[in-house]
Amino acid sequence: MISANAALTGSYDPLQVALSVLIAVSASYAALDLAGRVTATRGRARLAWLIGGSTAMGIGIWAMHYIGMLAFRLPVPVEYDWPTALLSLLVGILCSAFALVVVSRRRMGLTYALIGSAIMGCGIAALHYIAMAAMRLPAECRFDFRLVALSVALAIVFSFVALWLEFYFRDEPKNSAWRKLGSALVMGVAISAMHYTGAAAATFIPAASALDQSHAVSISSLGTLGIAAATLQVLGVAVLSSLVDRRFDAQALELALAQARLELAHVARIATMGELTASIAHEINQPLTAVVTNGNFALRQIASGAPNLEELREAIAEIVNDGTRASAVISRIRALLQKGAPDRVELDINEVIQEVTILVRHEATLSGGVSVRLDLAADLPRVLGDRVQLQQVLINLIINSIEAMRTLTDRPRQLLIKSAKNADAVLIQVQDSGKGLDPEQAGRIFEPFFTTKPQGIGMGLSISRSIIESHGGRLWTVPGSSGALFQFTLPTNGNSVS
Ligand code: ADP
Image (tube, rainbow, N blue to C red; front, side):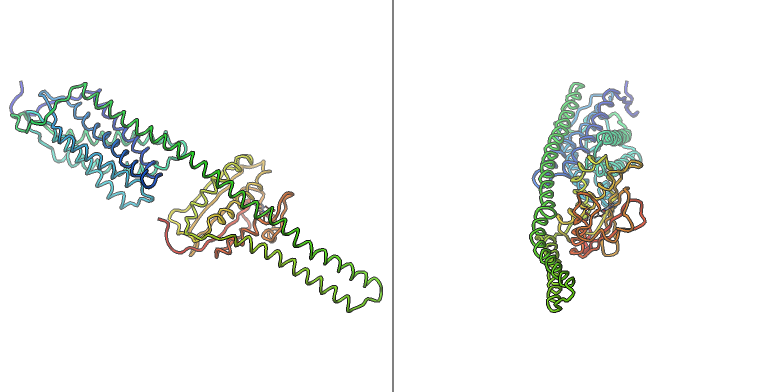
């Protein structure tokens, strides 16, 4: 018998509670997964992911709340007003879309995260309380406002944590599946905790059914299972399509990289080997032959005991001329290499470093497993530069390092690439754990054609230095470090990467 003033005592169906937590965790997993897609895509594809993703996530959060409510058994029949239920679903979808937009931004500052989580937390709380308002039962619902406030606060705090987790895991680093699952667990349990705190805020006092019953529908246990199954299916399809899309993207990236690798190889070959050798052979051979001929003539004159001083002077003058011509040819070739249609654009140097690291990945693995570590400063200003030329410089430095570590046996082969802000410039360092630079030769390594390698050409560092200097920067080595440390600066235009 139900007394007129005592609150109705309800109980939870543990299986349905477990089901609601499972859905919360699945929705969180889908959210983490979809945030990555929204970030990685652009234009129409991004919009499609945003709409599809927020619908799937919204349905997930919504279903979690309804199954949580259905799990609560009261000793009176409970029905639900479907237009209100639909409204709460709309709130869930909007809230998810907002969250996806927030986490797919390039950067997330603290203020942004705080405002974002306040809006999102209030959205989730709104979904929850609108969902409760959809309940139609012969009882009056009273709220304990301290618990209501606590549930809203929890929703905001959990939204904050969730936004950070999503932001950090959206880039899909390697081996992220377990970490993503861990974060999804944390987020799912957090969403459930918010829901059940909110539910505990309500007490139901028996009353004559006063609320409008015209659009009320009752939901059986089978109906609950149906909602759960459909929700899990929607989330499953969302995660699956994100997986397929990511595969396609990865393939496209591989293709683009293969293309870039080919182009770079081509540039490098033309720059260092083919054209250079041919022009040098052709253009330098002539003055050299003349130098030898004139030198021999001068020697014979001196050996004769009575040299014709006038002819001797002419021969030596020609030797000087030919020498100057030969060096002019070399300067011309270098100038040609430097010019190569520079294409200056504003760049994020960290991006260039990351691209190059991917390009040399194979080389690093093949050369006895060189581990490449990046230590890139956040918020670096942009630099004005030619992407391909700067890639070439980095590739030269990295390949030199890899080659210098090839013979290492007593310590790990490690390569560290670092970027940092430095007065009006950015500073990039490439350091290896190799044998380092021989102090006697260190002064000469930037000279054209200086090499200590049997197959070397000795143009890599010389070309790299000209490229950096043509960008208004400086390239040099830092003595006294273990291994070799090369570093260069690039002037900045003061605009921060955003
Ligand atoms: P190449 O690689 O064809 O020899 P470079 O101009 O790139 O031409 O390099 C010139 C020389 O500088 C190399 O032969 C080598 O002796 C020295 N060198 C360059 N980088 C390193 C390094 N990371 N460690 C040790 N020596 C280096």
